[in-house]
Image (cartoon, rainbow, N blue to C red; front, side, top):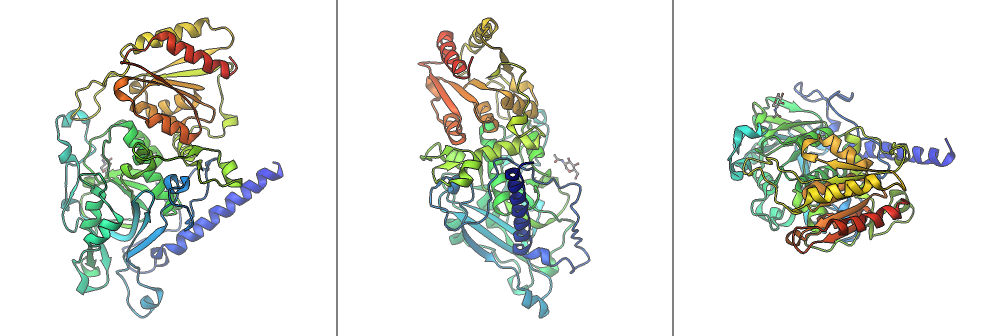
Length: 503
Ligand SMILES: *[C@@H]1O[C@H](CO)[C@@H](O)[C@H](O)[C@H]1NC(C)=O
């Protein structure tokens, strides 16, 4: 091992130690594992908890109050600099003076740039029967026709409670309207479920704080929208990842869906990313969290906000950014893409990724009809009316192209597991596809991958051009006047791309 690598390794180790120290010193609850017989806080990592993988593009998530407003780090990394403490933990001194028990706490980190908060708290009780919604996690076929309204949570007062050692505050609200308007803003969302959740939190005196089960390790609470759509789900994954990092979790958290959506294929990735997954309504009684983190809605991530506000950020390597910080550059989406690949145990170091013996993979992401959710007709909208013809002509051309070997991969994603999809993205040198949520997978593409998007006149939206730019990937659009693509036009574009790859 050369000395440079050793230095990097040592600094990663130091960083890890520092963040572990910060985690334990900043989370008041971990000082007190000697109190009540009900709580068994163990220092050994339970088998059910997954450690964070080592990500080549990782940069520290530490709190830096000087992160500039609307800088790339504020949009994609830790811009959650404004801390508010609606419920402070009781201090060490008070506890020594005899004020035992009831040390619940709650605080939020607000980002001016995203107008969004990541909140967390300790000794939080969830009462499933006070959350009105369908059970969630059902088989899709069993709930055909169920309304979206039924699947979104309605929180009654006290759906969530925090333990306090003060009878006079029993039943009081944790936060008022003004707090919500400042820190958990509705924005353009009609029914802001995370705001509803925070609004439902009541204080509960220690004597009334009974739990059928304690969850000792950090748990992320997520409310999903558009849970069957790949683009929106990636915004949810991103938000969950950022929330875990901003709160400095030492390992990957457990996950609880506080919604009543049925099961989808995308759950495979949720389960791979986090330590475990359960649905709020699937607990048999009140469940208490030693430490819960509230994941902001996917709509509040830069991935979604970039559709309506200009986020001028270009993808760069973490190594370059570490040496030359730049407010207009980010490696965060690459870090996140690596997280997804690591979750599926795919190799991360790009020098060790086995590329095809010779030549390049050209992945054609196909749009197929499939039943996405209970209100779906089973047909995807056609955005490329002659997709099969374009695919055939690309395949035909590649088979005669002798300068180098081109493997045309038929990306029938609806027939592939999530892991297979991510692997196909990772192995591709060129990714072609009609505008559609499946292209959001390019967050996991490796550096140097070229994106060719075919865009019909009806769906001229910038989702994937933006993601490609934020990741620093070369991007080429083909704009159609309708939804028909001339195969020659696609081939010409592809030929110039493969030439630039040395073919
Ligand atoms: C519901 O909980 C049980 C056990 O607690 C678990 O085995 C099952 O997977 C859960 N169901 C869902 C849909 O998460």
